[in-house]
Image (cartoon, rainbow, N blue to C red; front, side, top):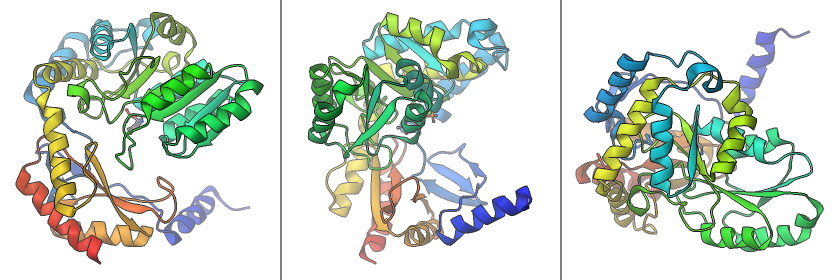
Length: 379
Ligand SMILES: *Cc1c(COP(=O)(O)O)cnc(C)c1O
């Protein structure tokens, strides 16, 4: 019988053979957009810190203050005693910002999707998910026990076909998409899917992880009428940690009672909530930060002659995983950190470099990255 180590070593070897093994590198990002990675100072295009708020003095001060007032940890799950006063403040602020009745904060965006989806649908229900929907939506769908079908990426016609064919067989139906797709940077067909959901008596959950703080003067990409469920994260543009969902008061009340990834986990550290609150205040006061990040992304696509950026995420397609790794290493040698995104995160043959732009990148830094990316594309 193979030992545990033999067993995992074999699995790692399989991944290495396909260039799909992963390793951790120590990364110090206190001077973002500069990072020190493996001892080398690089300009990072790898972070989701779109507005540079993870290092903003007001945000850090708010985190410190929250820890000083309420402690380093929440001490218990929210239902049992870990619901420190900053939670209600943040949930009010998020609901108001998104123009919805109520909000619920989760341990992370990943846990929010697990918790929302698995509480709202179950065996006998149907889930229709965009083919490129984030892994945590798919994991939530699996956890729910509902039947999961995927529609072609951003293809409402395919979603309509699936609804016509299958909707009648199931009790409830939940549709899943993103406002900005995390590996491609394109915008979800929210209006069309929302209309479709109305027509077929389905609910639509929009993941706004990469829209909040950037699109619509910072309000995000899931505020059109008729969207009942809008989730996102505190960890990207807000520069902190945690997840949330905005919905009706009734839905939020139900999730508090029914969502296992909310019930069976400790509350977030007060510092994380305090930081997110301060970030929202900065975004309300300075909505132009999101537009700056988008302008940097457009500068990059314009320089490369690519389709103009819709979001702060720009993939530069390479193809094979080995080539993407090589391209990423070549950039690293020139002082630019842009990660190779490989299968199974993206479909086979579509490995890419992913560039994420931030309001704190300078035009010169973006120009430097674009010129180096150009040499890679031409190879
Ligand atoms: C990052 C991300 C999440 C997860 O959010 P975390 O707070 O980091 O767990 C969910 N959905 C999408 C689309 C994401 O990109």
